[in-house]
Length: 292
Ligand code: G1P
Image (tube, rainbow, N blue to C red):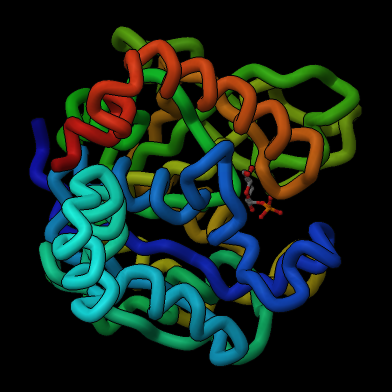
């Protein structure tokens, strides 16, 4: 498996679609049954071997930083009461104790490409992962699957994909495929952000997991605004594809769009099944345990 040191989490969005739930709680801390969206994203990054987590946040969301920071007083109280399971849950959140964590602010919502560019100071020559915590993927940890399949000699950039219907395709980045594939990796000849359904080059949509060569920061640098006047990550990847290669990876898990209440509800219900299926013995599902 390719070593993936750095994972970027774009978490600056204000989550207005989920008001009033997100009025004072960052949307990434909304629970999927009993586990915040952000925790699932962090677990997935750690499972893929990440050692440096970069959160691109907003100053109005201090809760994100609080969440990943250890709370020694609360921990000591729980230890004194012998609440072992709760101590484990608390330790699971305090990822800043385990790996490098960094916070940078995206003051203005200039797009996903801009958010990733905000983390450019942490580039280190190796590939970077990007996880959009709104896109929950249950089942096999998606980023680990991608890291295992990553073949930079063939395609230096990789984006998770799934098939979607014509009526929802215009919500996504969409791939034009060459027809060549290797296992779950399909070679891409173009990528377009949120096309009109009649202009969509395929039904393969981008999902919020990216494994990108370090060069992506060069492509983002000076990139003109795209759809909606925003700096689009899709546009930088489409540019990179031409010389560096891109593949779309058909992951095996199930994706839930937790940027809306219905998707969050469905993810919660599926995650609950996983948790109960785990027998409650560990208190943490198999996917998260891989990260511990
Ligand atoms: C972003 C990307 C889009 C991708 C989607 C996946 O869009 O810009 O290409 O398909 O995430 O969830 P957003 O949903 O943030 O508008």
